[in-house]
Image (cartoon, rainbow, N blue to C red; front, side, top):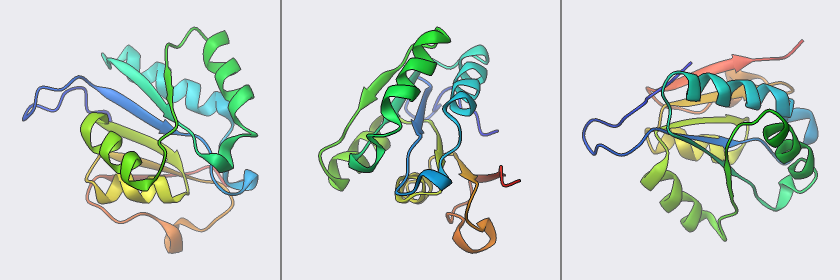
Amino acid sequence: RPVHLEDHATGKPAVLWIHPGSGAAAKNADPEWFVTSAKQFLAQGGTSVTISLGPADEAVTPLLTKCFTDAGVPFKVVQPSDVTALRTALASSATTFVGNDTGVTHLAAALAIPTEAVFLATNPDIWSPVGEMVTITNLKT
């Protein structure tokens, strides 16, 4: 897993950015999977967890926040108003990104943020984000 606890060039804190939704429920990893990722990141010395949500993620939001709260994992939720705001927030704070097969995951990879792209319903050989710091996790059964 890509864990970058500190950006040594900027000295900014280690922030795991999670985007747990997508435009299709079949593409979404279980919220508990993201909780486990966050726990691992924090156990390795990570500073904080940010969860981004967009309009297509309304269905996953209540269960996701409940899972994180019940697990005792501290997090903050951001809902950027548009792609420009999302890009600015990602670039300025994320040191590691984890997300489903979605446009936000491709954006994180394009910004050279170490990215773990999670695939369930789509083919990572076709749809994987491009970047030198991209790890693919295929949860397809």
